[in-house]
Amino acid sequence: MEYTDLRSDTVTKPTPEMLEAMATAEVGDDVYMDDPTVNALQLKAAEMLGKEDSLFVPSGTMGNLLALLSHCQRGDEAIVGDCSHIYVNEAGGMSALGGIHPHPVKNQTDGTLALDDIRNAIQTEDVHHTITRLICLENTQNICGGVVLSPEYTQEVGKIARNNNLSLHIDGARIFNASAALNVDVKELVAPADSVMFCLSKGLVAPVGSMLVGSQKFIKRARHLRKMLGGGMRQVGVLAAAGLISLEKMTGRLGQDHARARILHEGLKQVRGLKLDASPASNMVYFDLLDEVKLSVNQIVDEIKKHGVLVDWAGPRRFRLVTHYWVDDVGVKKTLEAFAKVLR
Ligand code: TLP
Image (cartoon, rainbow, N blue to C red; front, top):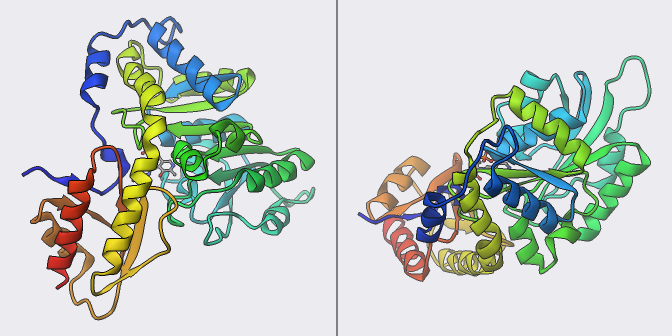
């Protein structure tokens, strides 16, 4: 059966154009920094984000970890959202591997960290305290609903960072979705940040890889740490070739995924037993099951699958559906019909 897969945008398989580019990519040894395709990708990513340099990394998780390790020493503290991917979904890498102490701050429903909460989380100089080094934001904010942080808000956080001698990292796994949703150049969205990670392998459809972006000095340090973690990838131009197509062809079409997410949201509102979150800001549709629904989330996942649709739960009574390149109008219709039938 051909499935419509809404579990995540991480499921996106490469397009035929990407496969062709991968098969014919010019490669070298990227640890010697002489893979021309990787070099072209790193140049383009840095240019598009308005930063000095960038580094191709195997995953978003490694990109975030490299940023944390580059900005912080052991025993330093990083301010993170309590619903951030870095805090919740990266296996505690910052503390396990970097000895970095996370300082969680409540994520507001709009994905922001309240500015006063950030200010209050900065440690005062005291022999008892850790040393605050870093603030991390996430844009789009996944768990809060794929919501977007505005350039104005990010500027304010950037000011707090600068006034307190801290660095600002943005987990921009889906920063191009934020850019599309706000109709703001991605450069403007990340201008206040010292470093940004973004993923090629989500809405941008490449099979593997993320980019870490920042100053030359920061990227030099991150490259060293990437090697330490075993992430020096040799003839990795075969993957970078797909990433170049992501940057050239995929960043401009994300609005289509957002429009389909809104259609899904509208349609699911009509289905009995579901309580939808607010209309999606980007490509994620979140909703809860009402008490009247007697099926468990796992039973619903299994039943929906019988109709050719893959979904994943996001909590004991919660779902997240994610639109992407491979979800077309037919897939949206099929999904709405599947939910209507299963919850009838
Ligand atoms: N997110 C995945 C899961 O891990 C939850 C998903 O399906 O959404 N930052 C953010 C904001 C992310 O959402 C993710 C992946 C990452 C970082 C990590 O990227 P990868 O999976 O490449 O390590």
